[in-house]
Length: 392
Image (tube, helix red, strand yellow):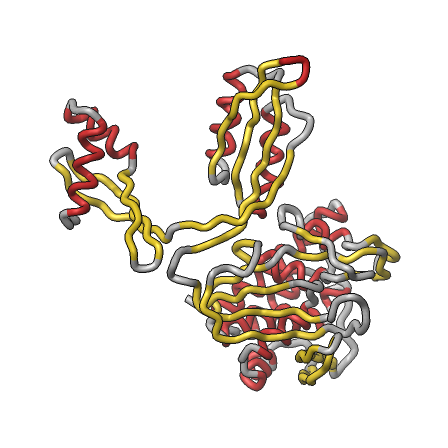
């Protein structure tokens, strides 16, 4: 499995994503061949070597051959991609990016997704940037994308809707639930196109994951000067076999005026949704009131949805948010045959070393009830069966 990790230390633009992937080894001529199938009136693509803040990088430049068509809607762009007959995964990724962007624009403008008309992102160069990013990932056979926390910049920008704060409204919507970080960049550090690409494709956010790096690419933007070089770095390689790592968000709310039934129902609600884990810890709050700290563990992209459940289900007026990196054992599931029937077990390993075997408790409980024995007997039998290699 090939992993691409985008290190957005100074931000990102759509052209910078493409340039970084080309610098990491994607073939420019092959990329041009795929993009020539797009019905956008023809355009010229080229790269150039540049320096930003003393560091070298690659620029990806798109020059439209004709006056760009304005105000394409989502259906127009999806049809362009379909007609281009791109590799299946590249087409799927490109369409997902534009669909996510349309949903963000629709929410910002309070209109239906199909009513969204793209302006800047509907221009030829932005369409090329999105499709080229998807195709370049395919040329590099990238299966998984991960990303660093994303910097937004500061100040204001001028766009087709006028003067807007940074990050722009659609970019802000795209970044909900994504770990952000400050950067010494005045202006727009991460563009809407880049935000759409990264937040659509990234499976997790955090520091550089354990991996065996095979290539590093540097994509350059147009901005020069400033405290940080205007570059985006991508690492390509294989995930480290020792284990896996990702970033998770922990939400916490102090509650002293909610019944135990409501707290229990809330835990069930978040776990039934997309929470990775949830728990309640007893506490003593101000005025010596007995209380609970309700905690939820989830992926960064699901944090907003989990907060919605906490606010809707409990009496809390505030939810704290912390981002953590975690190491995980590599895991797989097997089914073993025991004297009490089939039981699933979860096997965890780190590198080549097997660390733990954990029978699925629900299976063991059901088998114990059916055979009139203690659950611990079934648990022990499942572990023994696995150790003896008794798999069906």
